[in-house]
Image 1 (spheres, rainbow, N blue to C red):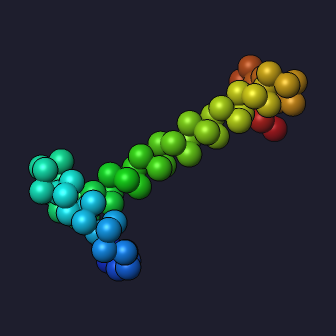
Image 2: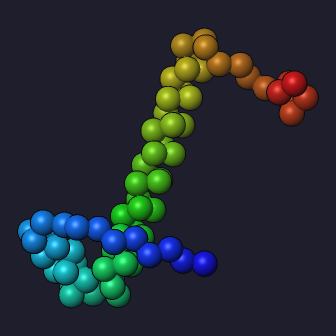
Length: 71
């Protein structure tokens, strides 16, 4: 199921998106925004992993040997 989301953009940003679509990188504006959201989600995941890695190196994390260690 899809949800329709309408956004308002300044003309300059709209031109940038249309230019990318016309270049053939994306079939539609929607494709462009879905791609941007996927990149953002990936970036956020990487940042969260880096933060967790830093916590572990700072000694704030707990190394689990099995799922039973979660209890």
